[in-house]
Length: 166
Image (cartoon, rainbow, N blue to C red; front, side, top):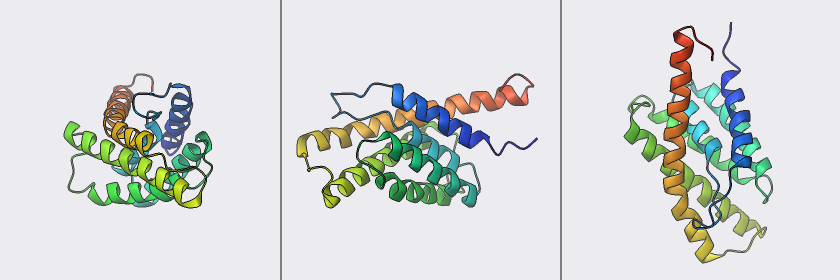
């Protein structure tokens, strides 16, 4: 049986969880970047074409959850997937250090892209202090999110190989 649906099911689950998790006022209202983490997670494990499909699906879900409208994630997520997919041959995807670095930088890039695009198009004014807090908060949030997503999905894959429930 084909397991082609698993990345898309994880994206839907992450979208629900991301929309239900509270934002952190201390970090400028940043959300936990679960969809960004899944984009990077699947880009490190899937062939380039499937990674880009997954990135586009994650971007549509991410932009649908954000109040600013469509656009930022549709530009940033495919670039994140492309960069992570290019590095997958030289990076151990299961390494905690790689997950922390990729997660933090990926969330930082997604947040910077969203703030920049909303400011350039005039959808939102540029607020320096909250924007800086959001950028600063995206680093640990992204690092933690990718490590947690990787741990959860690796545990599920091990259970599936052992014949237990997915």
